[in-house]
Length: 134
Image 1 (cartoon, helix red, strand yellow):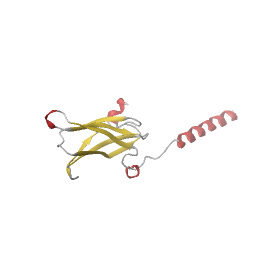
Image 2 (spheres, one colour):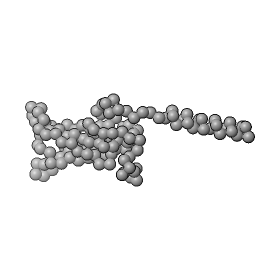
Image 3 (tube, one colour):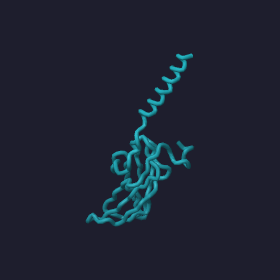
Image 4 (cartoon, one colour):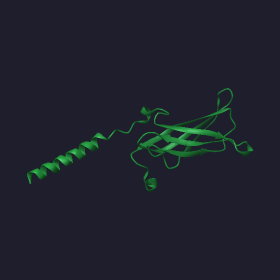
């Protein structure tokens, strides 16, 4: 009886130690830096009627779920001045180690574009509304 209690106590202690060892705090957004854990891979597509659009993927290389993700698309003229800034939501968030598609349409013609991922929130799992999806 005594050995059984000891075995149960030892097993419980090992499970708790293993669970605590794998926990790592969620990084603060300011600690992450653009492109280190989450970034955009994108291209400019200019379909008919000279109506440019930017499409691509937001890539999450971290092991937490990225929710409330927004991309910022900036259009620049030949002198480097900002012509337009536009934010767009990435629907559904970005699962850990995966990527999620985004598209921003009806951009002004510009000399060059820049896409960044300035806003996101780290979570241990997806938003409850998307929980059945992942």
